[in-house]
Image (cartoon, rainbow, N blue to C red; front, side):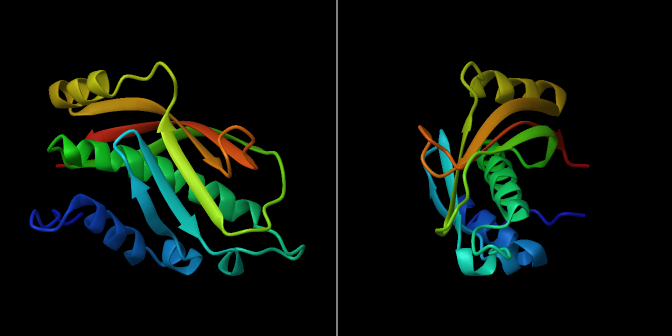
Length: 156
């Protein structure tokens, strides 16, 4: 059973604590860098995610992008006063270029996705899904990109 977050702690700090409590995520050195409501950024040091070629391990890229999408959906729900279990239902990843710097994953809802509709559906049904895009690097020329559907389900 997932503990209910302490309402006196800001949601961004709650989320960082949740991330840091997951052993694989902690080992990757994932840190929440920013959240604007429409966009969320996570970072991770290359040194903790390097492969035998001296660039970022593909599994770390996939994990960072998936976690960025998960964190974005989780925080949007919390901002609206909902606690939910959030899962990635499916995703497609493209690796476009090697990454020789620290990882920076940026997640946003896909164009056409409607946060208000997502939150309204969750409020009515206790379940909702939203498509998310996450990239490593610059959005205009990413080194890797993920498109996935994230599902929220009411707890209990």
